[in-house]
Length: 191
Image (tube, rainbow, N blue to C red; front, side, top):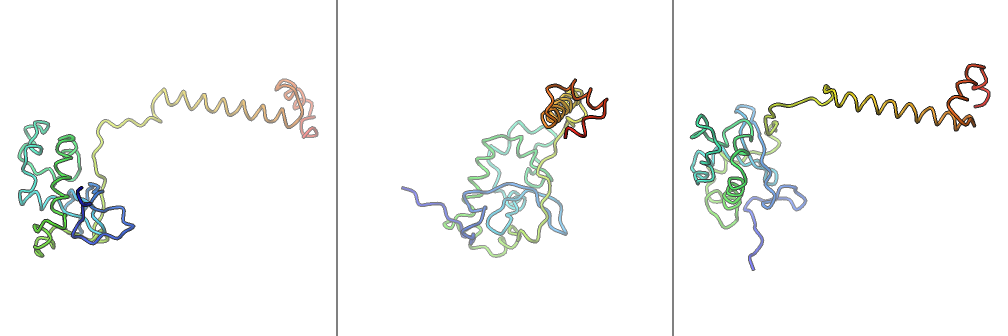
């Protein structure tokens, strides 16, 4: 039976970001540009540096899903996850596998290289997190005709419920009887 995966990075027991849960995101240092990183414990691992060093050269990162204009570009140096997401599940799995291997307590690549660790690890408190993806063709549903009709029906139903509640409160049998009483000035006494 395999032993549980352990990282050489000290991760607090109550952390949401152990080696088994590595969320991708876009971060920015004060003096840098936005790029892709992964949270691990209290740190962000800079994937653009690891990519520069050749850790993400496998075929999963060279998929034809990338347009001709994007081929050869660095996926993890982008300011959104869109290009990485476009590569699909095989690239996502391979990226997680590479990252977990590099963070493993048994792998010396990062563990034993203090200079490299200084380049790739940033304290979460020292970075600003950015929106992870650019969303194209967004439609504001509150501006569509269908949503507008739904809102109109909802308001009408609420109004009918309010009218029925007033009838019940005043002891009247119908909205018509309520209107007659309001017309005669009786409604306020009935309450």
